[in-house]
Image 1 (cartoon, one colour):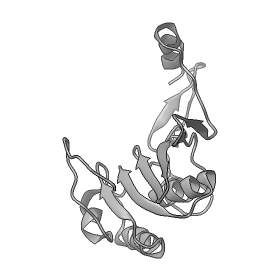
Image 2 (cartoon, rainbow, N blue to C red):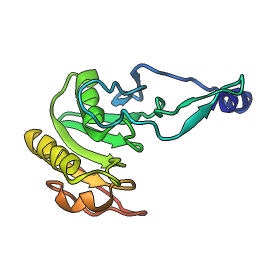
Image 3 (cartoon, rainbow, N blue to C red):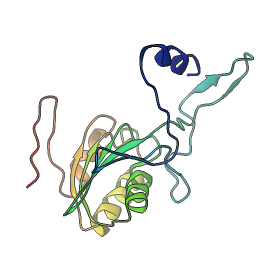
Image 4 (cartoon, rainbow, N blue to C red):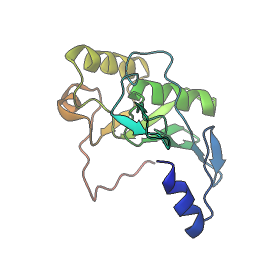
Length: 161
């Protein structure tokens, strides 16, 4: 939404990042999530209206994630995971140089997923030593089929020792 950054720069010290950006010692904002391995995340979610009035498919290229790097591995906070939760986890591990994922928290973008897509996500997380999963919005019935899935809702408090 091109008009929003212009408005926000008037109110904040706005810094837009399309590449990974480290801050606050242990945190990494991933920027844009590459979608080059799996099928998910490649369908348009609507249209973008261009300044000239034309429209283009909206692939939600601004989908991003926050990662907390700890001594025992990564905790991944996905937004909506429009790029696909497997792309999100892969990119977090690549950008951080750490293949140990402790937990994945947030939207998994599996609400309208086929049983095959859910099975693929399940197998993926099983192959990653099944980190703790906290699937939130956009995850639908898939939550029941993911390994090490934990209930989470507004007001939930999580503690990682």
